[in-house]
Image 1 (cartoon, one colour):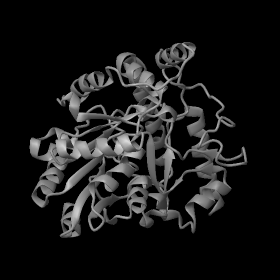
Image 2 (cartoon, rainbow, N blue to C red):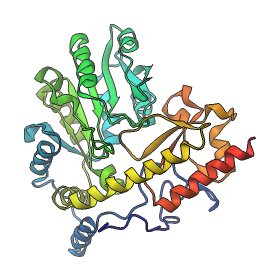
Image 3 (cartoon, rainbow, N blue to C red):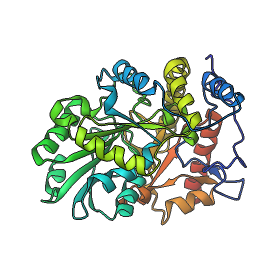
Length: 382
């Protein structure tokens, strides 16, 4: 490989949300979804050059929407107009914006669990009603249960929020699966908020990500697509994202809210994102190869430890592990006792307390140590 992903970089005492979460250095934290790899040297060089200019004043996006437009066409064969692209400060702030701006106080939303915990928090902060449906396991993949989804739609349901590729399950919804969801939302007149931040982290070579808004004008006109390169190129700390919204009325509402909230990225985020688009391809290709190797390492380990299970994960660097066969009262506490911290399963839905989400976007040596600690936790409970 041209780039080094095996290098272990000490992130403690760097204000890392993950590595500085626990006082004890004996705990290995593989929870929060950022990677332990240095950013692409091309991006680092561009950031250093920008800083060496000496002034980090208020910045505008320049030709970034043009770059994003070309990127979407190249990567996903998705043609959008530049005016449809709204540059934002991050996917999470955008998640919080959507229910506030697009739902009335008496509207209702549906969230398919398990799902990233900020979906729940966004609804709660906006004081909007919501209910959770449940993804089902079909052919070893976490997918939508359309029958349950239809039953969950109420007269005041306004919004369906989805995450594709799915966090934490790792499913990349197929074109047919997405089309069924989109057609249902057209039929029931629902808006769609689609978080697609993991779109550039598809690991299966025979699987392609398709934006749900790319199918038809009818689906696109009711969809707000949230995207970013923060995850795939590992610079979430200087985050930038974009919304794609082809509906001019919805877009104006979002623009108005963003203007009132000074909802814009920082100066370095523009540089990082533009450089990732222009020069990050070779680094990203090697990253995907490395993550595939880590995924295979976990699968091999699981083949010898059948008390822990993991459904087929087609994307992301997140392993949604099921510990329910072990009968632990508190999965997170038992793992921490044995030196490993994962994202607690109940963050992704109250029913998933026997799960844990493991971040394998780390050097192989770190991942091997994590698997050893899971084995120790298993043995200590026998």
